[in-house]
Length: 180
Image (cartoon, rainbow, N blue to C red):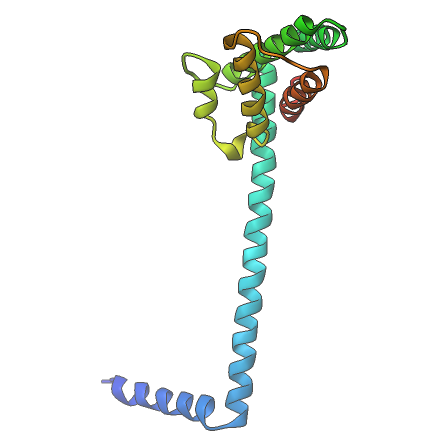
């Protein structure tokens, strides 16, 4: 009957490894090569994972944009509303500028609802948005805060420059999701 002496085998391999990797220049060279190959392999693995993550993020954003377009049913409706908003903004009347911001905020609310976020108002819905899913979330918040000031502060003064800046914030959000 054939038996294997595991202790002998273990110590033979151990002695060889200690001799190769500790006491010889060849062992040091082999060790450096092995660690270099391992490091390069890990670097390639990390780069591959990063690229796959970026690709999945682009795909996910495209699916989300497509879902928003499908749920809306009317692709032209936001564009007509946006045209009305820009018409208000081009007016010389400050109350029209305020109206443009109020209308743009309503359009943003519709977009966020179509994205599947729920809540009693736009502010609550925006709180539920994951920042990685909504790159222009800060712009949406900033524009919404100006809308709230217009709606809730009596005598809120709005300059034409500020109105255009706020509408640009709304526009950046709508362009991110290809809504207009």
